Image (tube, rainbow, N blue to C red; front, side, top):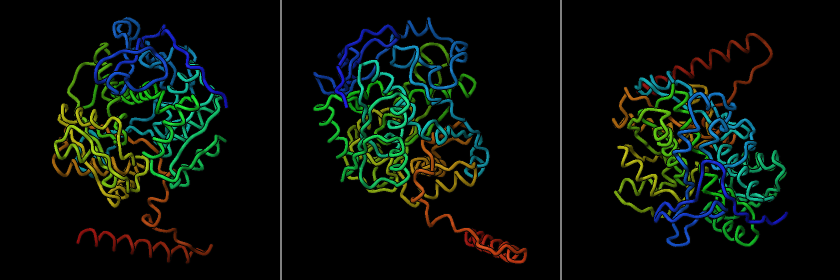
Length: 433
């Protein structure tokens, strides 16, 4: 694997600098993620006057059927980005789930079918690796709870980049296999995600690799904005009233907000107050705890939950997620593992969408907010489902029943059918009691 040359580039695109979210100090567009003055996180800054001149609804709709229809809003210079068909996932009108919960206008943004690896991480990695190539990297890497490793390995393979990914050793088998199939080097670290991430920071400094969620993080995180852009476009160029999204590092939450604001700022959609609510698992809920206690800081926790893709005990963007929830009159809630499993089953049996534990967390929090009267039934509410349930089958094993085994005879089938109907009646009776 070859060490990358850290090239400093002068952007010819609409992004103009890296800017500290805390002190406002600006930097050249290179591979760095922390302010040298205050140690705040860096974010990509854009020339919005240029965007207003360059982008229209029509120009977006004439673009590719992927996230790259929004290329002027993304931090890449090339007109030939890494495009593996990522994005433009379905916005499903969830009528049956809405009726079950007592809502009128509910939509599911279904990134469980995103390409190529069935999670929203394909968005951020497509942007990060395109930028990595522009900056001269030949080896890319990441610290991951699973989905990011899948995506980095797959898109690196497509782009012809060397790849080495780092994961906690106790990840779900589907996510481990979903990375190994692309033949990267996989390091399974005996520790939690936060320990993996600290190790990766050391490796990034010593080997000069492009870590998508460390030294390339300002570019990588911008890919999540496309989840905001797509919802606005799919709703007929308007914003929803309320969104509910999962919280791990908090980055996804903040970038959906940024995406909505950018579309307003350049005149693509009318301004509107959108409420932002976030979902965490109780076994790793540092952001929800801080929100509930009225704090403006997040205290790290040690993760212990089946929702491993949300198990980030020291979330980098937690304070920014809290600020957005508060200023939009949203909420941040947490649910336990049993509620997460119930959320996975509820979405599957009402809408035919099999989500992983992060999605189960989000659906369960949606239900909790509705029951608490914190979502208006008349609001247009969008729930973000970020990953596919085939990756975390262990979470629901033992909770979804077993097939009825029969002989290849009609009478055997009839007996089994009657038995299944009897069991269904008993379940309804128990539910009524």
